[in-house]
Image 1 (cartoon, each protein chain N blue to C red):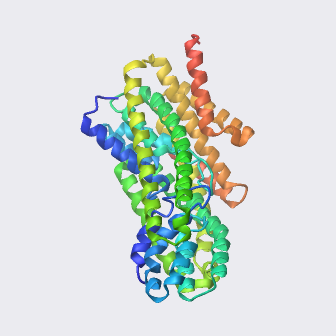
Image 2 (image 1 turned 30 degrees about the vertical axis):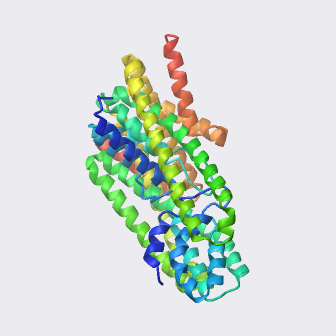
Image 3 (image 1 turned 135 degrees about the vertical axis):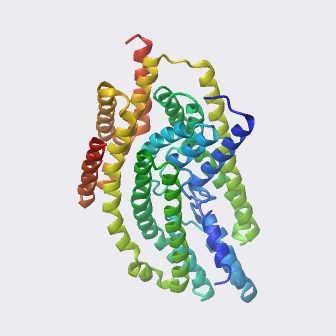
Length: 244
Length: 226
């Protein structure tokens, strides 16, 4: 795979031109460019068509974009008809989005960040931050290398390769870990902040937390947690201003 | 906010630009997480403890965000950098409330500026649509570099604005002790609510909920034993 390392590096910026029309499309084209270079000498017309296709609409979890990139580039070299490649790209959007979001955003991220928070408040300091960055980025880099290689090896059969891969099993395992770590994080960080305020302060803060949890659940997306926080801050400042 | 030397302010703006870029554009290496952004900003501002306190609390808010699809969310990176700079040098019980308030406002503003950058990216792509349709690789590269420059400038500008506001707050906003402590308790409570709400939503009603509750029980036990 000529240009593999350059494509891998460019995948780190796959969301660079993120927009509401093509989403990751142009970023995918940017990452595909080194991989498609050989096609320029073999078949310049096909190369131009491949470059155009590579920048079309595309969206998925950025960490798994390498699977689609590798598969479509392989298909271009195998001279698969263009409309089939475009269909493959479109078909990969939803599964790669769902699998990647579940694995990274809803699994690994809360698990590792939660663990780092607990370690930090228990006194690990910088080690917590270094550990978070090393662990997360090692997993992310490993996934990116695997995704690009697997996509390129599988070509049009990338769907089957994803189904057989480690990803569905990892999602099943990381979910409970993330749940446990997040559960651990909330009381430990709360205790760290509130230990110096005495019972009255702690009860006051926990009352704000309980009201926040209830009203943000009740109002749904109309009242996000940030809006609730700003509302509570505004109320406090108002009450202090009127002398309460 | 303690007096910031010019080189420290410049480093904070640079760090803010880097963490702003990290959120979406490049490299998504978790530098933009408030825990990381805040602690490093605290170190740059000369008060690691203040940066850590601000970073951990804003992280509780950030954990409520699931960046799925085209969802819109606050940008906590540059906001945390400015908030940590404001908190530096003050007792955390008094400074945390005001700093996190500034951080939350900047994070909302940051989320809005992200939409502007995304619309600007779309306009640039439309402007180069003929070159893209012709398969010109150079146009793709320019679009990519232009978009990165826009996002980096956005994040640097947001951090600079945040540092200017932090300076203004230090100079002109003087809260009495009771209000300052009250504000700190309110933001702590709101942060706990954000993290708990986010964790409960992610857990749903399946096996993960049981693990979440087991984690809460273990956490409470840990707090009591400490």
